[in-house]
Structure formats: structure tokens, C-alpha cells
Image (cartoon, rainbow, N blue to C red; front, top):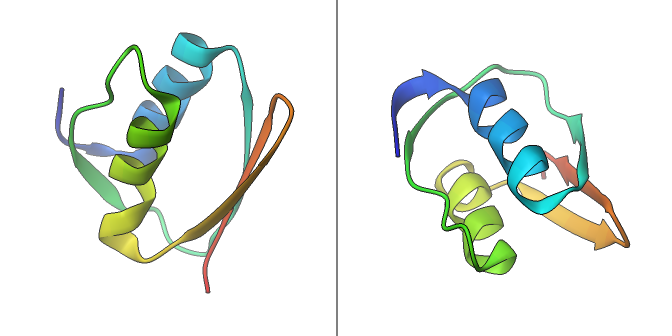
Length: 68
């Protein structure tokens, strides 16, 4: 669980937990408060991007996140 942490810390944890590489195309450095489940990557990604309205696409081990 992250409590008002820079989004980059949550991204690092997402990469570590799921063995993926996250590529960001965003202009701001938001703060993240929430949890990333260890057993469901879809929920983890949704928890990370939905509060900001970001879009994402996963292709194999690469997850791209961008602003709409």
C-alpha cells in the first residue's frame, strides 16, 4: 500500500512484482495513494492509472502508459 508516494515508486513496484517494463508518456509526476495486488496485474494497473484518467496498453512484458 502506498500513501501519497511519487507515482514512480508504484511503477517500480509494479515492474518488480510482475516482471514487466513500464514505459511512461506523461508530463506530470503525480502522487499515488492505493494498493497494488500481488496476484492480479489487471487490477494493479487499473488501480494505478484510473485515478488519473491515463490510458495503457500491454504488449507482452511491456506496459505503456500515456495521457489521453
